[in-house]
Length: 382
Length: 117
Ligand code: SF4
Ligand code: SF4
Image (cartoon, rainbow over all chains, first blue to last red; front, top):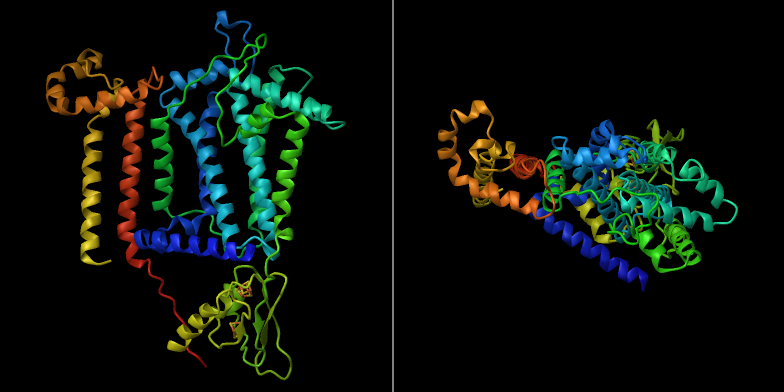
C-alpha cells in the first residue's frame, strides 16, 4: 500500500519537474537545486544578520528610557525607523528565515517522495532533521531578540516549559536565561545563541554533505536572483513593524503568531505541558528514525561484471555516493584495476550504468527496468 | 529554443525592462519619501525643480500609490526605501530572465558516451 502511494507521489513529483523543465530547461529548474535553496537563504541570513548585528544592543534595561538610554527594543526601533534601509534589511532577515524553513520542508518532501532518504542516505536524513530543528530554534531566538511584548511572552513561555522538565529543566532554564531571572545577561545569551548556533549550522551542513561526491551547494545565479526578488517582494507587501517595548512588570496575554517558527508556542498555549513535550519529542524522534522504520523495498546494489570491467574508473568518478572502490585486478586479468561496489553505500541510482562504456556494471533492481534499457539503448546507439 | 519562443521571451523581458525604467524614474521621489512636494527636495535640487516636476509628473501617481501600500501597513518613516525594494526585485527578475534566455542554449546536456570496446 505504502509502496503504491509512494510510487504515485514519485510519479507526480517527476511529472511536475518535467513540466517546469519545459519552461525553465533543466539548467534553471529549481527542483534540481532543492537542497541548495535553503543553503542560499542561509547566506542571505548571514549577510543581513551581520548588518543588523552592527546596530543591535543586547540589553533589556528600560528603567532609564527617559534619559534616552538604549536597549534591545530601542536599537531595533532605530534600525527599523531611522537607519536608511534598516527596515528593509530587517524584513529580509525575517522573511529569508521563513523562506529557509519553507525550502527545507520542500526539500524534505522531495527526498521522501522520491524515496531518497533510506539506507546509505540515513546520514543525510538524520542530519537534515537536526538541521531543521536547529533552524527553528535559531529562528525563535530571533523573535526573543526584538524585545517587544511578544519576545517577553515567548521567553516566559519557554521558561515555564523548561521548568516542567524534571532534573534537566532547571539547569537548562538557568542556561537559557543566563541566570535565574530575565536580565541584561539574558539578552546577551539570546544573541550568543542566535549567532553562535547559526554558525554551528555549518558543521552540521558538513555532516549533511560528507557522503556526497558532488553536492550542489549553490543554485545558479538566475535562480538566486529570483529567490532574493521573492523575499524583497514580501518585504514590500508585509513591511516589518515593531511591537510595543517589553515591560518586565507587565504580562502580555496574546501575540501574533509566525507559523513557520512559533507553532510550538501555539501548541504550548493549547495543551498542557506534558502533552506538549511528548508531542514535540515524539515528533522529532519519529522524523529522525523514519529511514529505519518505513517499510520499503530494500535497494539492491549495483553489480560489476568482473570479466567485462576494464578498470577505467569512470563509474568510480561518477558515483554520487562514493559506493564504488577501485581495487587491484586479479592476476588473471589483463587490466590493472577492477571496480567493486560497497553494497551498503549503493543507492541503486544507476549513474554508474550510464558511466560505464563497457556494459560492465548493472543495477539489478532499478525501479523502472525501462530506464536501464534506455541507458543501454543510448550507449548502444553510439 | 525556436524562434517563436525566443520572441515571446524577448517581449516579456522588454515589458519588464520598460517597467524597471518607469520605476527607476521614481528614485528621486523615493529619496524624499515618495512625496511629490517640491519643497521637500534638497536646496540644490530645488533650482531645477521645475524641470524635474515636469519630467516626473506622469510617474508621481505611481510613487504615491506605492507609498500608500506601505503606509497602510503602518510604515511611517523611510517610505522611499520601499520603492527601491520594488525596483530591485523587478530588476532581479529581469536579470534572471535574461540570464535564463542566454543560458538556455547550452542547457541540453551534451553527454559524451564512450565508444564500446
Ligand atoms: S547505482 Fe552505481 S552510481 Fe549509484 S550509488 Fe550504486 S554504485 Fe554508485
Ligand atoms: S566504468 Fe565500467 S569498465 Fe570502467 S571501472 Fe567501472 S565497471 Fe569497470
